[in-house]
Each structure stands twice: as C-alpha cells, then as structure tokens.
Image 1 (cartoon, helix red, strand yellow):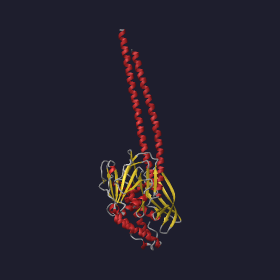
Image 2 (tube, chains in turn orange, blue):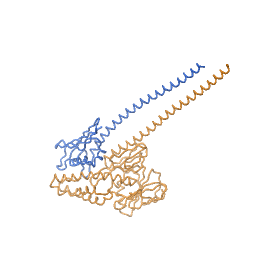
Image 3 (cartoon, helix red, strand yellow):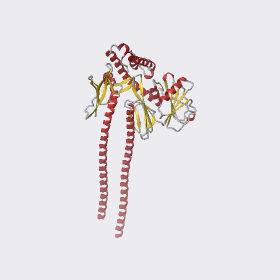
Image 4 (cartoon, chains in turn yellow, green):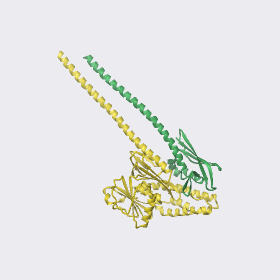
Length: 341
Length: 162
C-alpha cells in the first residue's frame, strides 16, 4: 500500500513539474511574441514617419523654390530615398505628396540626396508661373549635337548657357562612344539628330529626347538588354514654346509627365490671359487717348487658348499672337501709355 | 494528497495572478505612451496649421493673378489694382472654383488701399462650415493703379479657417 502511494506521489510530482514547465514556456512565448509585435509596429511607424518627413521636406522645398525664379539649389540634407514623381504628385514608401498646383518637372524616379532644384520663369510673353525642375547630380545628361548644323549648334549653345553648374552634363557630337560610368541614371538629348542608342550601354535602361525642327519634341525610352530607342508612349511627340519648356522636356524623362504638366501650365495660362485681356480693356476704357494703341493681340492670345485642341496643336497660331503682343507692349511707352505687362 | 493537490492549484493561481498583473501594467504603460503621442501629434497639427497659414499668405502675395510686374520683372509686395478687380471675378467663377480652392483652401482674402486713394475688394472668400478658429495675417503692400500711375499704401488681409 505504502509503495503504491509513493509511486503515485512521484508520478504526480513529475506531471506537475512537466505541466509547470510547459505552462512557463507557453506564457514566455506569448510575452515574447507580444513584445516582438510591438517592436515591429514601432519600426513600421518609425519608417512611415521618416517617409512622411521626407515628403513634408520636399513639399516645403518646392513651396520655397516656387516663390523665386532663376533659383538653383543643391539640397543635401534630405535622407537618401528613391522618390517616384508622377503627374498627380510624388510618392515614397506608400506615402504620397501633392504638387498643390505647382508645375514640377522631374524624372519618374529620383534619389533624394543630393537633390538639385531649379526654377525658371515661364513667360508667354507675360509671366505665367515658375517651372520647378527637379533633378540630381546623380542623373547624367548627355547632349548630342551636330557641329555642322547651325540649328543644332545654336540649340547646344542656348542649352549650355541655361543649365546649372551642378548638373552632371556632357556635350558630345556622337552617341556611339558613350560608356556606362555606373551613375544612377542616364538621359540622352539629341539636338536636331536622330536618336541612336550607345553600343556600349546595351544593358543599361535609359531615356532619350529628340529636339527637332519646328520646336518638336520626341520622347524615347530603352530597356536594359534592348539595343534601340523606341517612342515611350502613343503620345511621345510634343512641342516646346520657349527655353523654360525646353528645359522642362530635358528634365522630364517621359512624355506623359511632360504633357500632363504642360497641360496644367496651359490651364494657368488661360487664367492669366483672362486677367491680362481684362486689364487691357480697363486701361483702354480709363485712358481714351491710349485706346487706339492697344491692339487686339492680348484678346487674340486669350481666344486662341480657348480654341479646341491641346497645347501642342496651338503652337503656330499662338506663337504669332505672342510676337504681336510683344510688339504692341514695346510700342506703348512711346505713346505714354501703360504697358500691357 | 488532497492538501498537495490544493497547494498545486494555489501555485497555478499565483502564477496566473502574476501574469495578469504583468499584462495590466504593460497595458497601462501603453495607454500612457499613446496618450502622450496623441498630445504630441496635436501639437504638430497646430504647428502645421500655423505654417500653412503663413505659406498661404506668402502664396497670395505672389499670385501672378494679382502681382505687379514691369516687363515681367516682379515688383515686391505690390498688387495691381486692375488685375485685382478682374481676379475677383476669376476666383469666384464656377469653372475655377476647384482650382482656387485647392490653392487657397478655406480662407478669406481682402486687399485694401488706404492712402492716398481708398479702395477695398474681397478677392476670395470661402468660409469653412463650423470652423473652430481662424488665423489672420495682415501684410502691408503697395496697391498700384496703372491707369493713374499711383502707388497707394495698402494692406493684404488673409484669414485662414481651421
């Protein structure tokens, strides 16, 4: 009897110890899992906070840059991330920021450190807005021109004067010898030349732009492993109006973004054209001796902007009206009349 | 044996009790932490509101629809009176309502010319329904009348609704 009760006690003790340890292990695992979950959530929140801070920083930088024209800044104090720029805004790690009606031209993917921000005023011929051009010294811009073609040479000289010093740029007469330098991105701009992909960079994805006669622009892209440039979309042909829009096309690495921003720019143009047209009418009414000297040029610009078709189809007519408006504006001070702009 | 069994049960209950108290303490700690975070977020939101209001005032001061330019060169802190009169119509038009709301939000913008000529216009007015506060910024400006070539002293009054 005693032996049996001893054995039974020992068995109970064994079971109790085992159960106790199992219980401790399960409880410990639950507590550990709980703290791991908290740490994971905190890490994820910290990452999102970091992305939001970068988005906010970029937004502030764009707001500041928009207020001044012909400003170039190299920003090096933003954490290094890859930001995606699209028509509606820019995004990083699932966080998005809007342009808030700013006209921002940038490559579709860009490293934020270092960042080069450059603002150019867009005058048509009166001031409409500042274009914000966002790029990085990590993007290599190669301009291929034809030394024997005066138009190509003129374009090359104009562009060389406009580009900021801190931009990574090269001016070459042929694309065949271009080598991969390991830089983040490469964009080739052909000035009055047909695009040719560099033979030594077949494995590198890149984009290209052809600046042609009649202010025509053609956007191209090449994937890694493909030998030739192809039009980057169905609407890869566009136009530029002046130096600011030409630089905008150089910086935007795809036709979609360029066309989208230029479309928005033209919406702004319509509003300013209305204001200027009304201003001319008010001046003519307030100063009868000046009324004969205000031509219909401002009204023509306003009406042409509301004509059907997108901005790329309005180029020829608009160019003529703008020249007439410039002429009219220059003559007004001779008659002691207030200028149109 | 019955005593041993009861001891074992008591010990298990003790362990469970310890765990329960531990988790209660952890939860209390988390509540304090998240309450602190919420307070800190509210502060940041208030800072952002003030920053946005200041940004809006600067934005208005540099709207091409209003600013004075001579041969496309910007005249600082100057509003063109004729442009302001046309802008009033433009900013309140239905077709441009969305655009200017995205730009200016819930705010009221007034330009007043004080001396030598008095003139006043409310360029934009969009009051937030049931707003709780508003920040007002007054900036001294020049209001230029191109018809008479007179530069008037004036103010730009920007109220932002929060």
